[in-house]
Amino acid sequence: MKLHPSTGLHGTISVPGDKSVSHRSVMLGALADGVTHVSGFLMGEDCLSTIDCFRKMGVPIEVGDDRTVTVHGVGLHGLKQPTERLYTGNSGTTTRLISGILSGQSFEVSLTGDASIEKRPMGRIIQPLRQMGADITGVDDKFCPLTIRPGKLHGIEYTLPVASAQLKSAILLAGLYADTPTTVIEPAPSRDHTERMLRALGCRVDTDGCRITLYPPEKLTARDVVVPADISSAAFFLVAGAIVPNSEITIRDVGVNPTRDGVIEVLKNMGADITLSNLRDEGEPICDITVRSSQLHGVEIGGAVIPRLIDELPVLAVAAAFAQGETVIRDAAELKVKESNRIAAMVSELSRAGADVTETEDGMIIRGGRPLHGAAFETYHDHRIAMSMAVCALACSGDSEILDENVVAISYPDFFDALHRLGG
Ligand code: S3P
Image (tube, rainbow, N blue to C red; front, side):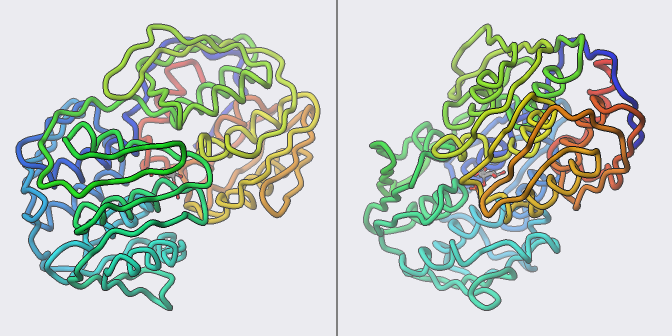
């Protein structure tokens, strides 16, 4: 994909549905009694992997036109043994959350994903699920493929070693099948879509600060889901609108769940001109967001905000490269175990454009304000690296290329069309 420097981005767009909420709508819809109509579903490869896994376990799921999905729930105990190994593609969320659900089933199943998934840490779910009584094994007890056999589950109280919604959710979903309540304690609040959706389906989930307790329900009752636009996808346009001069972009119906909106807070701290309007509640808070270009300045990004913007750090690093002064990203070692090592990837690609960036143990230091030039950017087969460097390319002097650009289909198949429509 070739990209030219942009002289300004203008317009109103809708970005695709939230990836986290889309996954959960299928998973919890499958386990509920009744039919779940999902609107605004993200038709990206990751969420299609989740649909595929549940279809293989006997759940009828219809994918309609216009981003609708209908899930015919089979109830908590209605999943069937698949005839083949489940394949989760590139999706860490599918792999980890489904492992929690599979731990409570009465059949044996094995699952794996692509080359990236086979490198991602699974010991973090194997350990607590085993404590709950699950019979789960992996390669060296750390990696996919995983095999899960029937086990009798009991509730545990578990303190997470990292603020991870995938890990928290795997334990809570296994807790649906336990004979006593399950409590998870987080080091800092991570996205709470699982808790919200479980409550909406009639399950008791109590949250007290960083302590979440799930009470095993008799059943879940299906309820339709309106998926908000994904703030993690909107983030690419928030940064593009901020750093490309003469820009004004409005993004409609974006989910601004307080466990996900760190990117807005940090961009505002950097001096971005961002306004929220039309705030409403659809089970998740939603609003329209407008960004206009402005001169950004460097900031420190660390501590409890990190889980609230973990997927937006690559594109925030791009914003930092165009900001005046130094930006320090810390407490973000989790970035090393995402779809790629996102610290190494961003340091290498921003350097390719001429930025002054240093990798640290748990983040990076970006000394912004140097003029950046276009280049041929690698994606590391990581959708968010591809989109972050595309945003960077628009604000560089000279032309750029994104190699392996099709990887954006994981979370945003029409990303380049949307950039084009805005004048990019
Ligand atoms: C997700 C949680 C986050 C995030 C991922 C989606 C989820 O991962 O990076 O893209 O839907 O629960 P971790 O929980 O591993 O931080």
